[in-house]
Amino acid sequence: MLKSFLAAALAAALALSFAVPALAAPKGPVDEEDEKPKPLPPLQKNFPLDQTWSLKELNGKPVPAGLDASLKIDGTLRGSGFTGCNSWSATLYPVKDQHLMVGPFALTKKQCGKDVMQIEIGFLSTLLGSPTWDLVNGDLVIKGPRGAARLARSL
Image (tube, rainbow, N blue to C red; front, side, top):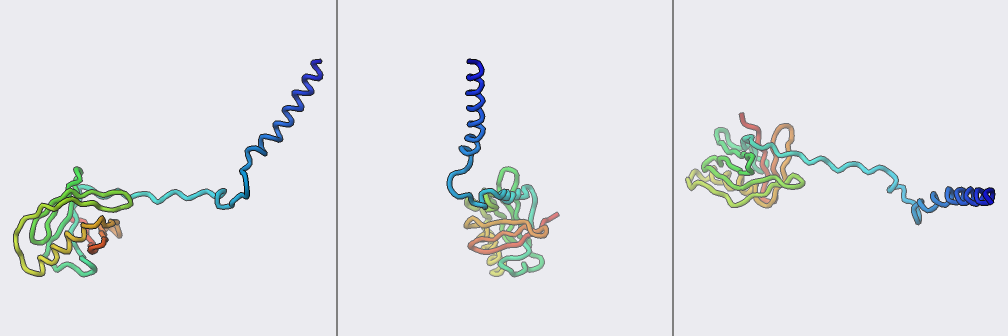
């Protein structure tokens, strides 16, 4: 009786050893793409907080020499700076996929020459509409539906 029990147990173990791999195999045709390792998604860059950036180009045109327009996002996600004419501040924070979100602007109300006011409007408009940002060759590049700006790190 013990011999027949051992023979049955051995037969069952042998049958399971062939059945388990067959059950574990994927059903249907095997796609080679599924077997290849998938690359990791690109790493998100961290926005450089607590650094001041000076406007160098607006919509592909250089900013006139002597005109100082700036941007800084501090650790509390408060954006602030100077437009060349007025000081400004707003809630400004980086979000997923290197976009920026901005709240309402607080702006001083000084009037300057027409060319300076156009740069002010263009610069602040660039920050609207969830623009993207990137660091390119040490410069901060902001591109959105309302314009593009290139800023250099200030000392």
